Amino acid sequence: MKRILDFAWPMLGLLAVLFSGWLLYSELRTISADEILASIAAIPLKRWCLAILSTLVAYTALAWYDRIALLHLRKPLGWGFISLVSFTTYALSHNIGASVFSGAAVRYRAYSTKGLAAAEIAVLVTLCSFTFLLGTIMLGGFVLIVEPSVFVRLFELPLWVARFIGILFLLCVLLYVFGSILKFRPISIGSFQVFYPRPEVVLRQLFAAPIELLGAAGIIYFALPPNEHVTFFSIVGLFLGSFSAALLSNAPGGLGVLEYLFLKAAPDLSVPDVIAALLVFRLLYLLIPLIFACGVVLIFERKQFLDAVRKKIH
Image (cartoon, rainbow, N blue to C red; front, side, top):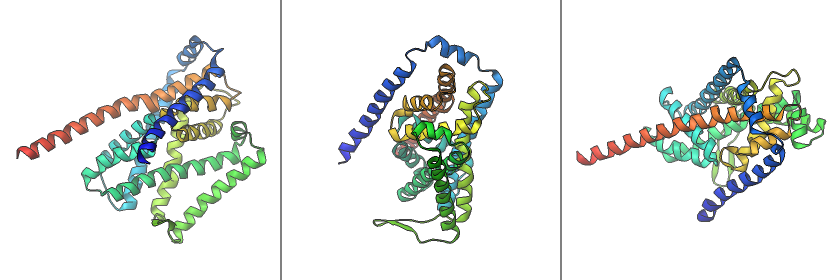
């Protein structure tokens, strides 16, 4: 079964890329590369700076995910080490796909050197993933109520259904908060039990995840030209829907999936401008972090190798 899954995950990602690539081609076949390059060149320096700042906000919040999980485990570690591990984890997993598995491998390699057991790292990975899910549900619920037209176009929902789902999302978040405060019984999944985090952990989750998502969406928003018909929260809604679908597709970096869904739900925006903004997002949020992350991994593994050699010599 494991061999089948090892083969199936990459195949699923490849099929997602091919299918979404075909759909994206059908959307862009009338657009020239010159138009997209012109849109990128038209982005003013101020908005480039704001997009870069949004990237830093997003990756700082991602480091907070790990910090929160370690607080839950009562395993305090320095911000510097946590930030480096988190940055490397997400830079690699966002580009590789199957983020739960690729992120677990990076975190295990790093946190095991600080004395964390495999079971503790598994809890850390799960809680980080849940923090992201919690933020998506909470922010998604807010956007579905305030700016439902985005999801109406993306998923072809009636307006009242979109708002009703938004209310349900926020009620789920409230239930999670009450479960922590009132110390509900742990949720049992077979022999595995999931305990509600302490209130101080939950409070941090409620801030960290929305900040990360707002930062990531901000990259796209600031890379787009100002438009009186496009609000920041409409871009947040577009990002939540398309980015979540891209992650679920298992396509490396959500390649093609993110672009197609974004274009489908953004008829009021110029296609070259949208593609230019998404290319800026990929550059700042995915590609540049990936280059740095590969360097961090090489330095870390070199140090681990040299330490092992020294131990054998002595």
